[in-house]
Image (cartoon, rainbow, N blue to C red):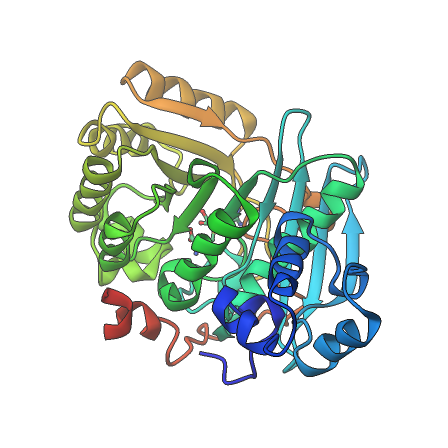
Length: 367
Ligand code: SAH
C-alpha cells in the first residue's frame, strides 16, 4: 500500500467529519454532497467559506494531477494521464456512447501479472493505488461527462493493474461509488486476470457487481503462456470460482477473449472455450476483441474474417457472444494499451513487482 498521506477522496465520511471538527454540523453534509453527488471541484465548493476551502486544499489536497488529456478523433473516447503525488503515473479512459457513459479506471500503477500481450504488463508493477486515487478517477471523468451534459453511470475496473490484487483499496472504492456517488452495483464491473481466492471473496461481499474474467485461452498449456498467473490458478479452479460467483450473486459473468492471430483463434479454441462456458450456463457471456497492438510483443490481432468465424462457431455451440468494437486505438486508449508513458522492455523478462499480489491475500482483506 501507498504510505502517502490520505487525500480528500481517501477519507470516508467519518474521517472527513473529523477533519471538519469545530465546524457547524451541516458542513460535513455540504462537503460530502458537493464532492460526491455534484462532483464539484473542491476549489469550487462555494457553499463553504473561502478560508475553509483553502484550508482543506492545503491540509488534505487531492491526488491526481493532469499531465495529458487526449481525445480520439471523433471525440467519443478521452484518455487522461495522471501523475500521483509520488510521481507514479496512471491512466483513465472515459467512453461516451450514445446511450451511456462509461469510465475505465486503473487499480494499480503498472501491473505484476506480466501478460505478454498487454502494454501494462510489459511495463511492470510500480505500486497499488489507494482508495482515494481510484475514486478520484471516477470523479474527474464524471465531472467532464457532466460538463458535456451527460451522466457517468458505468464504471469498469479494466484500466491499469489487477483489481483483485489490490482488494484492500478496491473494495472500499466500490462501496463509495455505490454509497456516495450513487452508482448501481449492476453498473460496476470488476475485471480480473483470474485470481481465484479474490473471486471467491468478491462473492462474499455485499454488493452484486459484475465479474469479468480475462480468459484468452481455454486450455492450461496455452493459458500458462498467455496469462502466467494461470500456473497458480489453473482453469478448472478458475471456472469453479466463476460458478460459485454466479451461484451466490446471480450476476452475469463474462469472459474476455482477445483474439490473437494463429494463437487462440482456431476452431479447436472455440470448441474448448464453449465447453467451459457450458459449465456456467446459462449465464456465461464471451466478449471477443481483436488483440490491440502493443510494443512489447510480435503478436497481432486476428483478421475480421477469423473473428467472425470464431463468433459464429461459439454461437452454434450455444454460447452468448459479442464482438467488441475497438475504441480509442488512435490515442492508445484501447484494451491492453495503457502504459502511462512507461518504457516497455522489448526482450527482457518482465519485471514482477515483489508485492504485486500481496494485498489480495492479506488477512485484513478476508474480513
Ligand atoms: N488485470 C485485469 C484488469 C485489466 S482489464 C484483467 O486482466 O482483467 C484489461 C483487459 O484488456 C483484460 O481483459 C486484458 O486481458 C485485455 N487486454 C490486455 N492486452 C490487450 C490487448 N493488447 N488487446 C486487447 N485486449 C487486451
